[in-house]
Image (tube, rainbow, N blue to C red; front, side, top):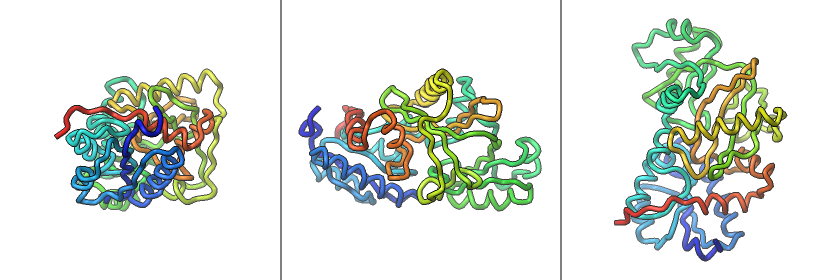
Length: 309
C-alpha cells in the first residue's frame, strides 16, 4: 500500500483508563511516525464523545493505541466494528479475552499451555489457604489491568491483605498467582510472525510500572541469549498462546522461564506500549524494522468490517 490508500486515519490515544498517560505517549509516537510516512493521520484523545467524533470525522480506518480498559478490552473494538471502521489489533473476542487474565489462563490450561497456578481472591478468601496452596512469594494482581498497575509481590503472609486491598482499587476481580523464579521474556507478534525474544532484567522486585516506563536501570537483552533452537521453540509456543485466545494483528506475549528452563506463560497484551521504553519497538529493531516501518506494518494489518451503520 501507499500512504494515500490508507485514507484518513484516526489515532486513538489517552482515554479514561489507569494507563492513560502511557497511552498518550504511545499515541503521539505512532502519530508522528505515520505523519513521517506521509499518512493522513489525526490524533484523538478519546473521551465520551468519541462516537460522534468518529462519525463526523470522515475517517477511513483507525490505529488504536488505547491501553487498558475501554480501549483494549473489546469495548472500543465493538464500537469500531459497529461504525464499520477498519482498525488495528485484535477483534472484540481476542481483545476481551486477553484483557481478562483469568479467562486467558483457563484457555491456556485447556490447551496445555503452561501458566502459573493461581487463586481468585475476594472478601471471603482465607489468605492463609492462598499462601499454603500457592506458596510464598506470590504475586497479586487486578484481573483486568495492564502495565503492572495494582500489582504487588507478597513475600510474607501478613502482607497479603494489603496487596489484595491495593489490587481491589483497580478491579473487583483479583488474582493471586504462583511466583516463578527465573528469567522474564517477551515475544512480540507481528501479523503471524513472532519477532526476536527480549529478556528483561530489573533490580526491582519485579517488572513493575516504574521498571516499564520510567526506570533507567532496566536492562533489555535482544538477542535474548537463548540457544537458537530454544528461542525458536519458545517463539512458536508464544504464537500458539497468542492465537489460542483469538488475538490477531499484533501484540505481545509475556512469559517466564524458571530455573529448570521450563516456560510459564503470564499474559497477552493486544495493544502494547509504543513509547521509548517499550518492548515491541526494541524487538522490531532487532528484526530490522525501524519504528516508522513497524507502525506502517501494524496499520496494514487493520481488521475489515461489514457492520457499518
